[in-house]
Image (cartoon, rainbow, N blue to C red; front, top):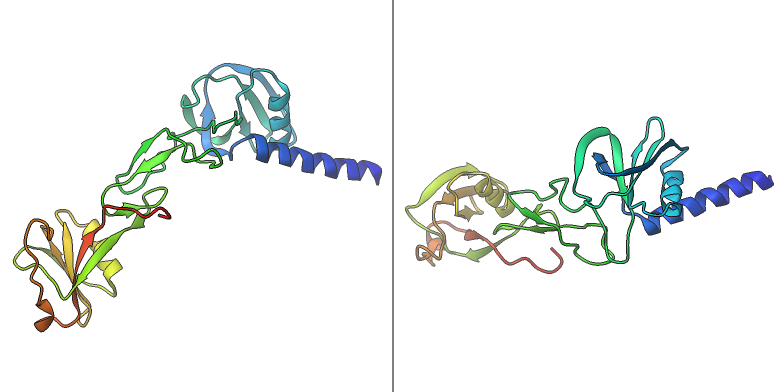
Length: 225
């Protein structure tokens, strides 16, 4: 019973060491550079403990199917190669010390820079999103609307949709679309090749198209996005 308790306490301790001292694993990659030691361990937590004890260890590669643990002294943590059998775990050093942009995390034409968002955030990168996209990985569609307004004579496509979000999603994925007119009563989405900044909006479209609204991509993301 005593030995069982010791094992449980030891496992919990190893788990805490890994969570507090290391980043979350990056799957499908193997870190290159100076290898201090290669061994087989029971778990990634044991590998983490060995890295903590070894001077100069900055990260480790871990292969889950056989417990391969490669303790690394890599100076450049962006020097990696794809390897589906491995994962990389990085040791934290004061401020965030992470893998940054190697996984191409930014979606929808967002660009990635190797800047941590905060000292407490496990993400060591920041996505710079194009107009109309927000979120940590540019995964959120962001748009505004002007009620009763529309743009005439600059059609770039048409589709039946259920709501304004679907309309702007259609616009995002359609080449040449800059804005849209959504007619709620008809469930119609008319795409525009220009924006309201380039062509004046007609502000009484509701007379002909009940429930119409002009939709545009919003370039300013809120803090929570």
